[in-house]
Length: 247
Image (cartoon, rainbow, N blue to C red; front, side):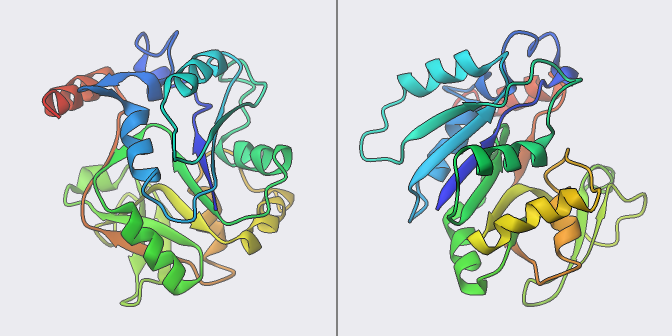
């Protein structure tokens, strides 16, 4: 299995914090945001490689980060530059996934994560669920705050975990299950990324692909016992730093 970390965005809502530094490399407590993510990814069995895809503006900083990490006994990290330079010519998350697959000739199961979302649910438990179902698997987090749910993809989930319905940013959320950017896909799903684009679907948010996929084949959601934090504003970052200052 190969893990892809999506880190090619420009995080303009966090300016000026991210004008010259990617969000993933912002400090949080005693680590960087990306370090919390890597701590969990490194627990996955069957992991052969981690590919972090970023843009030309930040590739050098990620290469410095990767070279400073002690990867002894762990899957190697490759930093991949997608060649984009600003928010106007970015490929989008799905575009970056396809770019990574083709550039690296990937023909293995995939674990795909936003490179800036920290989480506290068990990734290894989610992976075990994926292996049990042998089908595309998303993470679902219970979100009590209705206003927060309006900002997410909200799923209706069957008892066995199969996704019955998924709506992006609903004005009236039907359930409390928010879908965040963590995905497991078998290698049989890889050709469907090209089909998704060929049918004229948008290449930006990574959640758009499973929103299309569940309509043509079974897709499952693992109900995570924990939280997922997507730091989107300077105020939100400051609040999260306060929460993590002693971790």
